[in-house]
Length: 194
Image (cartoon, rainbow, N blue to C red):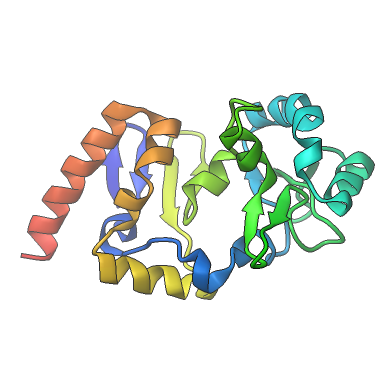
């Protein structure tokens, strides 16, 4: 683990390669799993506020799930906040393109300038999962076999997880943190891969 301020970062974030390969996986991470995407408490009112604006971007079954369950729900496994699911399956905010690839309805509305919030930070930061503890925050690589194609593409392109996630890491923690993270990655690289 590497420590930066109150954050403990798994060395996998420096060591492992990753670039989403939607052409291969079709965005199955938004469909598979036993709960919705994790949400920060401060994201809950954002979802409530933007739902009327993004509703037209969502599939009818997604709208129905949100109208019946709410814009977010409590995770039955750990009591955290998560996105609503359609019939216990895909995220209610999921849309599909003409090739059957999963996309995010919130992100599409963001790209069109309808809302100024891209998507939940846990989605944007994937495959990093953030765990908040009393005295520190842990950033860990969530390894999932459905992302094997992303790992392969990352190796081909020589892109490490922290590089692939530059934008969301800056969105969550700021430019200074990301600069320090890159410096730590360079030091780690010298020590372990020289």
